[in-house]
Length: 364
Image 1 (cartoon, rainbow, N blue to C red):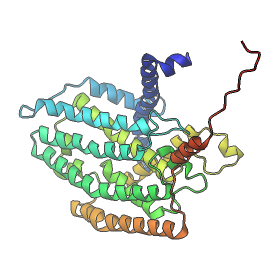
Image 2 (image 1 turned 180 degrees about the vertical axis):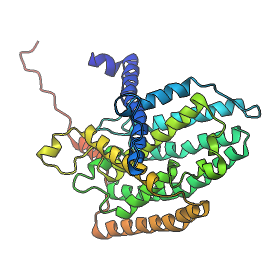
Image 3 (image 1 turned 45 degrees about the horizontal axis):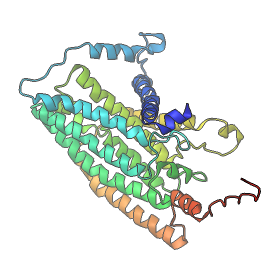
Image 4 (image 1 turned 120 degrees about the vertical axis):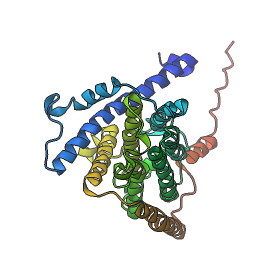
């Protein structure tokens, strides 16, 4: 059976499909219960009950909302570009899914354990804004178009800082492989030595996912609902799923880059008994709780405040910290020169090949 899956084309295809389902099915279920958890947490913070009628403790409320959304009529504005109008939500949802191909849930557990996983994630997360821009333009609505423009400007402002933060982590690790980044945090999580960058990354993740207090593309007080104001039914549901999947993705990136990924907080017996995927899920849930907490606590930023924070605060701070990190590592001799993958390849290349035993004289 293992020979079929590993050495035949059909077996590799089936194995890849099963790996994708093993990631995406729990992810979609996680989105459903993330919405419920957000409504419960917001209700608790605002001293109200939240969903509590449909199912025990309101656990089936999200599924009732999903059924209602899927059975509504899809309305396309008469002046809209029909093709792009329908492509935009699918693009947003698709990009939110394919980013999970390189996320390791345990040591070596990833659909594609590539050596440039960080670049892959950065590229996919940057492409996500195109779905919003296309939706804003294709809707043929001034409100939607303004929301798309806001999202583009917001993305440009924070992508630069996000890139410099990731460069700081890569300087310490010396590898673009996400598994190597996690293994480099065996002794200390990067949220401690790189604490300012951890804060910058988390706040930039809020802006990257258009979450409060940076949900300006959806500003209902001035743009009705922003870029998806003309969407309904399943098309709106895909935008909704894409936003919450991006929240989980950015929480996973925060956990991998700064919180040790699937590593336990302490390498002693009671903690090491818990499997790595459970630790990763727990850290993702913690970061998601912070997302929800920020939404319930802070008012929305004005647009000029958002631009000022991105260009005049985060950009100089992340650039300066990157220079300080590189200088410190170079001065102390801690700058990594060989990645774990390169070391393994070099070690295997230096191992002499096994010598075949000479046949005995009597062998015929």
